[in-house]
Length: 325
Image (cartoon, rainbow, N blue to C red; front, side, top):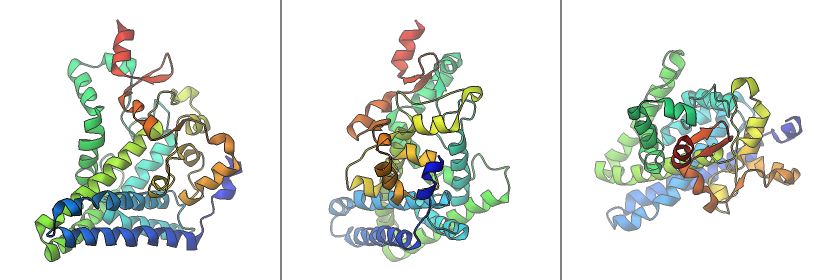
């Protein structure tokens, strides 16, 4: 939207402050956990949610770098994003490309498969074999989506440029360099604190950040009245506005998640820095209640699994089965 271009100017000083007030507390929280393991792991583990949320916020900053919205210069965004990738276990250039494809095809039934949660239509699901339907049901189960899936994604899948393997050496370099940089950081922690302590601290923090991030990403596009169309009827602006949610979180969760819950605005104008999204909401209050969810209301959409092209809404497996009878 042309009206939102005025919000798409990052403030270098504000960006540096946002990076500092996230990165320094994150490093401090991890250090406290590392030093506190011997004194009592359960007390140390209590600090994991804080460190995990701070790591999630670093990922949101990396996300803004990928959109070119965190700093004014492309190199500033790219090198900051690459450096943060070593902490988030995410190869920046690979993720930047797949996420750009996600933005370009959100809500387009003929452009699924990049940077999104796999979603079948009702007709596609029942056209699959019994084994394929079983695998899809397992994939869409909350334990897999928000537990096993995030662990696989950040620990294993990101080690290779999956989906971009034949798109040039740039993506191989991104995946390999990020894995090496992450490996060096882990090796340093193992050298100073030991293997067991490193594992007991790093992996809970990473998995909390990963699972929370996947939950956020899920509710941003997977809700009953989401917006999907075939390519011939698809509109970028309609899909962005009506196919993305507004997850209205209370403070301090809004701060930890970098306002990413204001996702319909983000998809309309991805160059708006995350710290300016609430300015857009204040300037255009009509956007506040569009596809609005609070944290409690975000639980119900977790069970929605199939897009019903006839009713134009996401439905559960049970609803799809009853309709097919």
